[in-house]
Amino acid sequence: MPASPDDLFAFLDEHGLAHETHWHDATFTVEEGRDLKAKMPGGHTKNLFMKDKDDTIVLISAHADSQLKLNQLHKLIGTRRLSFASAELMEECLGVTPGSVTAFALMNDTEGRVRFIVDAALIAHDPLNFHPLVNTATTAISRDDFRKFVGLTGHELTEVNFESLVTG
Image 1 (cartoon, one colour):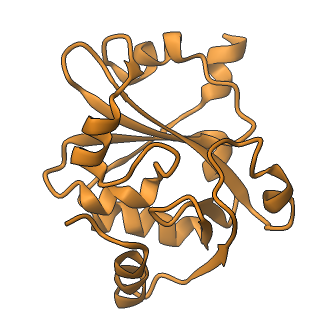
Image 2: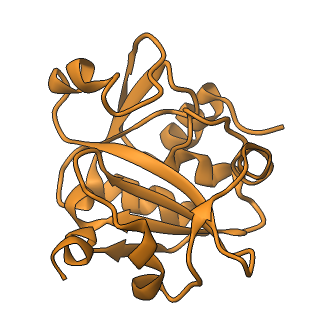
């Protein structure tokens, strides 16, 4: 069974990672959550679940306002060209459904199948805000505690400057 929001909160608490959650109506897009996010400090995210033709699976957490040149990203991270992965693969690897994809879902990837990429513009913020495995809440966590969380899940955090893809 994939982790629930309560499982996530228990994991964060167990490891001394401070967090604060705000419950709200479901949001499926950055635009839908804009008013809510204006009331919460820190960096807000858009999260993309992708794969390439070699079945390299990638989770990208970017700043909500970052422009992503996805057709160029593979050059920076050493994969083949990326495309959106299926909802079935998302559920299999991360235990979440479309609209709820989040970096917190890395805790469900116990086999280490997913490569994690974070936007430099996002990680510059403190705190960071992600859905807690469902899109009816937003959980804030400090940047340092988020880095610890990623490591505790057995994943590496690869920071990419998406702005260089837009201007480069």
